[in-house]
Image (cartoon, rainbow, N blue to C red):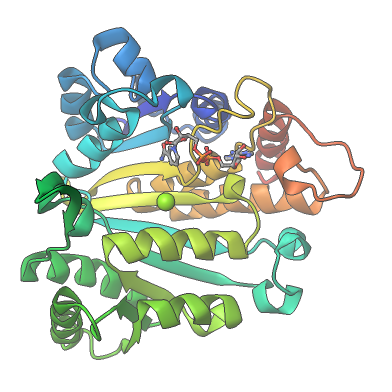
Length: 367
Ligand code: NAI
Ligand code: MG
């Protein structure tokens, strides 16, 4: 069997800094576990624009379609703020998601015990929290036509369109039900069926798909009520499935339940390829963090946990994924904190590379 292949796109800002720490873990797997990944590296975002005049070159796009998984750092930065919309770094990321047809975005919100005090919510509300938000990623209001800013009479109108087809809802619902089957068989679907026709269809189709998963306990909630329930008592949920826009907001909200953006991984999955693995892009939830870029302050854990998700969902290495997650848990329990994980207490933070090295040491200790 050929080696598992991985395309690494570090991107801009802190992207390359956190990706350097993932590289240490990839090297560790080669040296200590005899698992060699065929790793290639390329440009995305602002750095790709600087090199090629486009945020994602066609050759990079083609490579992304061939590999078993893509791991991306982050894109964007103030330098690119005034670029034409079609050339902005984010368009590179959107093109990857669209052309790989990655319709299911998995975002776990998981509370590591050592960080339960760090949440802005009470400790007993978040301790032990482990939920997964599945956000539809390739359709909805970010893509619907018509869109644009138009003249109407003597004023301008801004227009975006929320549009979902039955098949788009069906496939993301199936991803969510499959995930629920592997977890606690509990799924909550969120929309605004009270005020949006697309939400009425969403609820209907999810209910229909649910007939294929009779073991899964399905519930429905309006997305605004869902936002309230997520902060009131998040442990009532296990898997949540929702559309692109609500998922963007709700997953960011759920993210903050557990503390820092620097801790949050994500996976974006599409249809199965010939080898049975889903098309997949893994990336931390955070952006390029220009305010701390180049200072060795970035927390690499979100990117490292994204690689762990790749091990689990693309490489059938669930035990090794757990091994990486436990190594992270261990260094946190030992008290290591990057700056973003420290509150007012006057403890000294560790650097990006010190955090990476400690996780590698914890992996060594796990053998
Ligand atoms: P951001 O996520 O880059 O930063 C928000 C705050 O969190 C900043 O204070 C930052 O220092 C901190 N932070 C983020 N990741 C961190 C980490 N790993 N360790 C420690 N602290 C961390 O979001 P922001 O500031 O809204 O956007 C900055 C740039 O990133 C923009 O150009 C934006 O378009 C882009 N962006 C890119 C994303 C992506 O590539 N997926 C997602 C979000 C934003
Ligand atoms: Mg967001």
